[in-house]
Image (cartoon, rainbow, N blue to C red; front, side):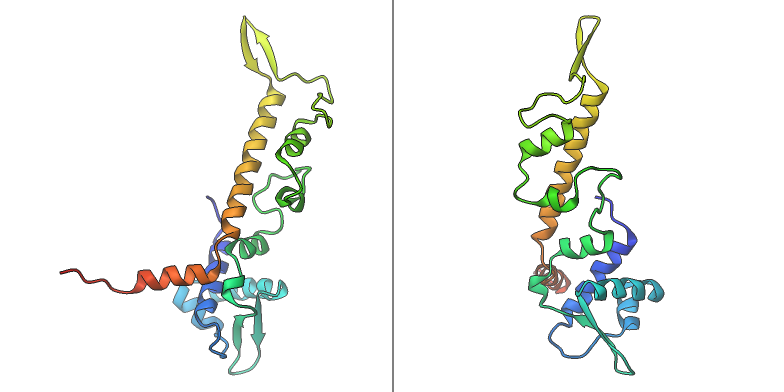
Amino acid sequence: MNRSAKTEYACLAVLELAAKYGAGEPVRVRAIADRQGIPSPFLVQILLQLKSAGVVESTRGSAGGYRLARDPATLSLGEVVAIIEGVTGDRPAGDRLTSDRLTSDRLTSDRLTSELAGTGERGEPSGAESGTAEAGGLDTVGADAAKRVLREAWIEAEAARREALAGITFADLLERSRGRSEAMYYI
């Protein structure tokens, strides 16, 4: 899965803030940047984007910094990725379907398939396209049908990715990271 440095840094920063959640003290940008290896100016931009989305809160002054605006158990990895990457995320430019409609439970796979294929409600082609064409006695996939099928596969994969990310909270990630940072000794 490809992800930008910005997305990676945002998730690392939120994970760092999740570790300090409930302490009452804001975490300084410099502390997050140093601990996670994130350039400070870039981290400030990321935190401002997360702040405008309501994920983090800031405190000004000499004792200022950032803290999570809500419990890490209620904040999913998918939410942070969507905020940083934008609503459309990895979706191809010019796609007719909006992200909200794609992830909506009301959009059935049949409707998705017919919208992608350019067919009507009953599945009839809306244009003069055909799925296969005979060439030399062999069936081959027409260019339009191939593009539609591939696009549908990408959309299904993206929907599965988003669903998986939505199921992982920062409390889950924090628990995993704590479990891996403890030293184990074998005799």
